[in-house]
Length: 194
Image: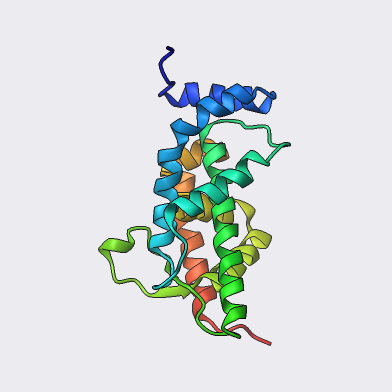
């Protein structure tokens, strides 16, 4: 019996093999990334509205199904994989929030905090749908800053992992993270002008 890969490089190699069409690589990969996917899902769901019905395992499994359906993705590395997983989890939660909002005819949108250490602070919460729309607006202005928010806030990636994924320095990630959070705070605090 062969030992399971544990280093980021070995995980990256399995991702590359999977991209090349090796289904056995996917079978070896999933047990290795499952714990991290559960951690990401748990972090997402901690930011959800009270009384939500989605469980961590359900979010992981739905994201897994969508990840496996990503036929045309050429995985670059472990951080790329988690970045895509973060995007998919965000989409799943936004879709559910939209469904929930429609079901309640406009009320009860889920609330999340923009603070990364949600358990440690009493930061004001924001509507997940409003956050999603604000991120889309930020992406129109600065795609990199929007990706940094998505990777760090939704994906749970550390500064160094985000820097590696985006091929920029850690200092740039921190600077853009601060600027993007400030922009989002202002966008979510100011009422839209119509």
